[in-house]
Image: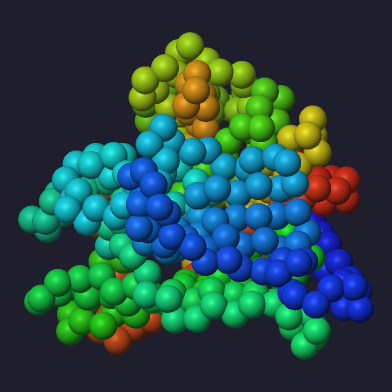
Length: 360
């Protein structure tokens, strides 16, 4: 694995400002118009060029994200909508999918709808339609020697008779650095074992994603069985190069493959994408002992021009398939499971070269 390049925090001269928000921090507000009216949001400004918005009522996930003038994320036509926990059939999840830099999927199932052990499971599970209970927001204050900012949110999923899970999500950034660090801790609060799945739908869009941009990973690639995926991810093909919009991808045509990246002895690995034309890249650092595979979703439709890199602990072919193949994860009564991962935004040559080195 190449050495990770993380830019040092910018020094801030505290004799030249009095309010910390002048150089960065977290701003809380509510939407007052449109479908998301009344919804809560937190706007995080790292002070290093990275700005991102946390949707408190939509899983404490990230929709908009910018590095300097460049948008990093894909946004769907509907944008932000209110949480809709009643959309629990088939592909209803797509009706409220905002896109965004991170839409988390789970925690009971991920991937395609399926019927498992007599239970009908919808696409990608309930998380992104679950509001957070904010436990803390910690602002940076360089005058006090504190450059880290953080948000902690708690989620409770379940129903009477179970299953019942709790998630405590911590999101951290450091003033002057362009990175987002996550710690997700799940706890089985019920009285019976619970199937568990977790997937990070990291949706990248224009202008970061553009013709000629390149995926960066050193991985075994296993396309899903459909002909579109087999053609796109054929051995020796150019599937790491982003094409311009494809007429063949109008509608719902997509290509999907599983990536199994090489990892360090402790399981740490990195995948990402670089656009040398705009001088920006994104590195996704995670642990293969927590996320056993990474999905690469490519959908190059005109307008709906998007790709995602999706670390996950299961397949996207439905929980019934995972159970049948013996790879379904379980949380025992009282058991906890922790996921730690980071998104680093790279805007300098050293960082971009580090990421591109994954391609050999």
